[in-house]
Amino acid sequence: MLHRRSNGDMLKTNQQIVTGKKSESIRFLYDKYAGMLLGYVVEITKDRATAEKFLVNFFCDLPGQLGERNCEGLDNWCQLQRYARERLDIFMNSKHEAEAVRPTNLMMHGARDKYLDQLSEEQRQVFCDVYYYRKSIEVISSELKKTEDSIRKTLKEAFAIMRKSGEN
Amino acid sequence: MKINEYIESGILEAYVLGSASKAEAEELLYMKAKHPEVLEALLELELDIEHIAQGMAIIPPVGTWEKIEAGINEVIKAKDSGALTLDMPFEDRGSRTKSRKGSQFIEVEAESGHMRIRKIWRWIFVGVFLLGKIFLACAIYFYLENRHNEQELEQLKYELKIQSPR
Image 1: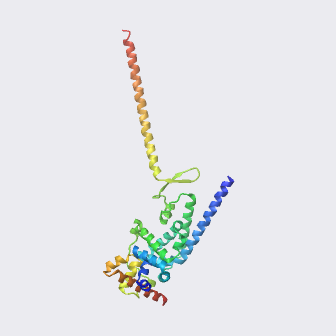
Image 2: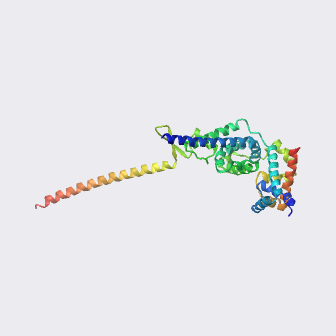
Image 3: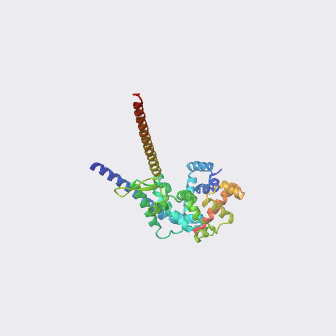
């Protein structure tokens, strides 16, 4: 009996260590990326309250996700952003959220404008379609009736301009 | 195609943002493995995107982490009790603590507090109860029918006995 209990305690301790590590990892990810993620999600949802709700939901579900994924697999903004976009699609597709979200298309914030104002209309559209709405180059090229190469060039130019804006 | 041309084509940007086609992604992985310049450009680009995202960041409101921490603790607690459905959204989990309606479990009173079982058992219990009632009704019916038949048989035997001496 004593033996069983000590084994149980040992397992519990190990679980607590794993949980503790996960909790630390999530805190680390939160400190590093929560603001970036909120800025990103606000732009997609056009609704600050929904974006904040998603942020809480996303980080709360991470312990389960970290069990399946390697934590280091999310230790990079591009990967975290891609994963968050997948989760956001599920979140937004849920009936409850579909009813709650009323996009206004008027949601803008200064930081975003600082970057996007530097771009031409076409560059802004290509960047937003790729970064926020995850449209493929093929889809954008057919929508804008331009070649895929020219869309990729436009995307590259948009990045170069935004990079410069960030440096200034 | 020269490496510089490849890097300048914009394919790296499309790949990092997840907009590259499967063929492009495969090509890029090959190029990345073969040419360190491509790998370097890719890492640099990831950092640039991170800097841009930092510039567009919005500071979460005060108390957001506390909400997340409370949610994580709830997940851990539920995991310890062994009755967790991880696929349930956090908000649902929060409302479940306030109102048990609509959750996947129904509560059954036990000697020591509560126990949670799957809702499907409610229908199984109802089915077993109804079957029990049907069997009981059948048993009573056949018992009465049998008693009635026995009485008739006794009656016939009696009548035969009376008629036989004649």
